[in-house]
Amino acid sequence: MPSGAPQSAVGWSGTLNGVTCSPLLHAAGAGFEAGDALIVAPFTIEVQRSERITVEFPDERAARVAARMMSGIVKPTCGTLLIGDYDPRIQPVHAKRLVGYVPYNGDFGWHPQPFGLRRAAADDSDEAIDLHAALFEVPKAEARRRVYAMLDEIGWLDGETLAAALALMRPIQLLAMDRPSDATVSRLEGALPQSVALIATQVHVPAPIPALAAK
Image (tube, rainbow, N blue to C red):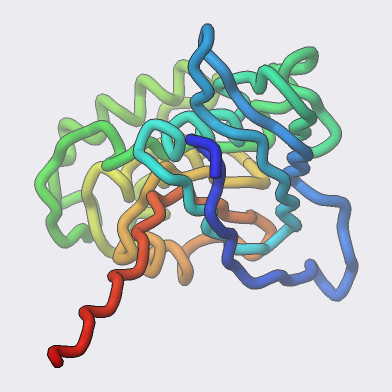
C-alpha cells in the first residue's frame, strides 16, 4: 500500500432528528504531495452529522496532514475534498467556518488535571481563550463562558480538551482531531453537541505476527 494511504476507517453513523443529511465531509481520492513526496495517498470517506469516525494512516506525518486537510488548513493536491458544500481550495473561509481542529496533544503541553469551575490554570487558559476569541471575533466574556462551560462538561483539562473547547467556542459542525487519546474521545462523547460530527486520525498499528509454535 502506498505511503500515506489510510488503512481503515471505523465509526458509527447517526441521523439528526431522524433526517438524513448531506455529508459534512466528502473526500474522493483526496491526497497530498509535497514535491516528489507522497505525504497522504488518495483516500475516500464521507462523514455525516453526528457521526464519530476514526481513520487510520500508516505514519504520524500522514495522520497529521490528513487531519489538517479535513480541517481545511492543508489543501489537497489531488482528488476532491468538500467541507459541507465548500471546496477549501476555492472557498477556504466558508469551509473553515464549519470545522474545528484539535492538533496532536492540543499543542499546549499542559499536565493533565481534573477541571472544575476554573480552578485549574485559569490564568493560562484565559490567555488562550482571549487569543481565540480575537481570532474568531467572539466577545471575550462570551468566549470564556462557552469554553469554561464546555470544560465543566468534559470534566478534565489538558491540551487536547482545551483545544477541543476552544474549537467548540464557535458553532462548528465538524471537529477534526489529530491522533487524540482514547480518554479524550471518551470524555468528549458526553459533551459534544449531537449535531457536531467528530473525525479523528490515528496511526495504524499492525497486528503482531503470531509466534511459530515450537516443534
